[in-house]
Amino acid sequence: MMSGGVGKYTHIDNQPQVSGSVPAVSDPGHVTVQFTDSNLQTFPPSGSQGKISGGSRPPRDADDTFSKPISGSDEPQQGGWFRTFTIAAYKPYFDVDTTDVLERIKDSLFPFRGTFTEKTASNPDLYGPFWICTTLIFVAASIGTFVTYIAHKLQKKEWNYDINLVTWSAGVFYGYVLLVPLALYVILKYFSAPSGLVQLFCLYGYSLFVFIPALVMFSSSP
Image 1 (cartoon, rainbow, N blue to C red):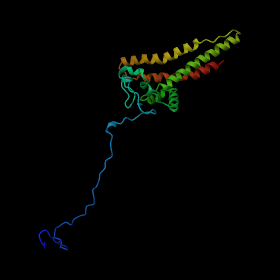
Image 2 (cartoon, one colour):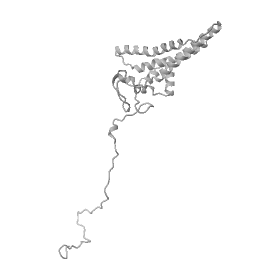
Image 3 (cartoon, rainbow, N blue to C red):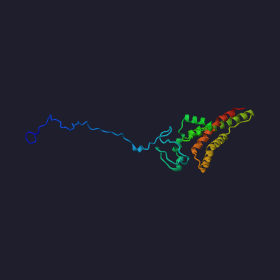
Image 4 (cartoon, helix red, strand yellow):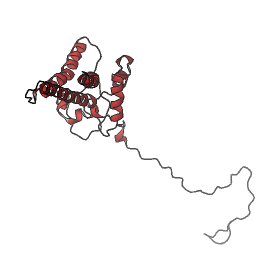
């Protein structure tokens, strides 16, 4: 009810509620909905493979082994076969530890089981083949030198060290590991057979391990 002069009003208190009216609800305050920030620049995520973070990734198929840049790498990216002359092109193939190498050596001693091929099909390495081949070179040269030394001493002849034993050993074993897989890759490529070049290097490199104990046993036999 309004009373008094113009502009003066009285508050109406204790008025009965009208049927069907809705009582006023106090304002609980503003509800703030927060969304977590998402960085769209990281999509798709560049998940690192293996144990070397950054540009590590599983080795690709033989057709583009050294042709595509490594995703997530800060190094200058070069396309085509120019990447074969960069360290980044070979870094994923040395992404193994001692446990991996020992397991692959053990599997290479039993080639008919097929476990070696299964383990190296998606992640072949060059670390094991390089050191196996290098070890075999020095073992063969050392045993050859020792055998010639004993033979000269038994015959009471003057003995001189022959450096050509190391040179011949390096040429034979490095040539075997590089040329034979490369020739096999070319043949399989000609017949459209799926095979990776690095996988062949890995296979033939680990297959040389059996010759290390064989040489030691041969040198110790009478």
